Length: 373
Image (cartoon, rainbow, N blue to C red; front, top):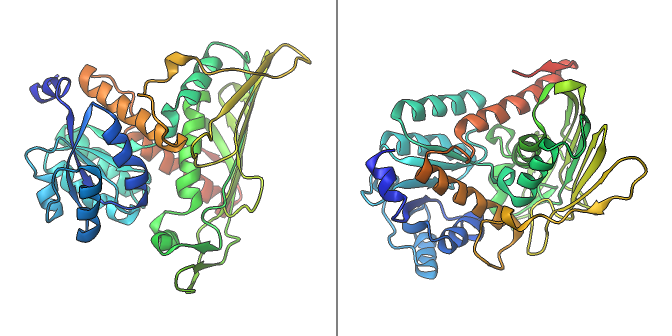
């Protein structure tokens, strides 16, 4: 462990934020203020007025004048990249070049090749790299992983997940205008499928082969504030079946713009029992918590399985569940920095997810099953 890392195990990790949009304010700022392991040291945004307003409202110590000022700041230990996906790669490169540890939201970049280049650049520079795939670290998911690995269901026979949300539908706010172009890799499939498949596969293992269908049903998107109608070619439905290790079957369905009955449902079947995981929300507001039910044996009633208290590592708060998931990631990273562990997801995890989504798109185009590396 380096001297810097050793010092950071005692002193708060000093954070420099890049970007101050909705998720930065709703999630990151509230989490970093809550956790004693962190200190909100500096902020830079292309919107200077918004940056100063956020700093005044949330106690961020300094607003700097440029991205270079942020990444070169001598009192910033961790650069947190919160601008839009098309801006991620340039921002991450600057942080790495400055020798700073870097967190970047998912999607890491708009292409697999670019994300792989960022992995290699970070490795050469010897900096820690973290990607915002926080759902894998939520208490319910770590408990689910342990249930599966401990043999609660026995040998895995099938896994099914359905995720639906009203977001990314035919109407969007001006703030989400950048999600419309397919080339920005910021559709519901890129963002939501990425997050939830990473969450699921962190618990049950990754598929070995998939056969997919991605559809663009929402052909135009209307911007609410202006009435402007934009063409859309990005997928808003993704379905695939697949094979996992040991011949377990996989079924995935992710859909955007759902009007009613939205949420998350996961069913896991084994030769000794069953698990069901549900949530009424795919994002997660206050009280939108996951429910895990299970049964062992045959014709047994499904019983709610309370998540043991030891899976909760956070200070008491009234933050929304989606924000608490993010807090778990920051707790994991602080632990990694202190002990040399590797619990927080990295850019390499992002590349694996990129490749999975690429395979789904290729399977759609070619009409065949694709093997995953």
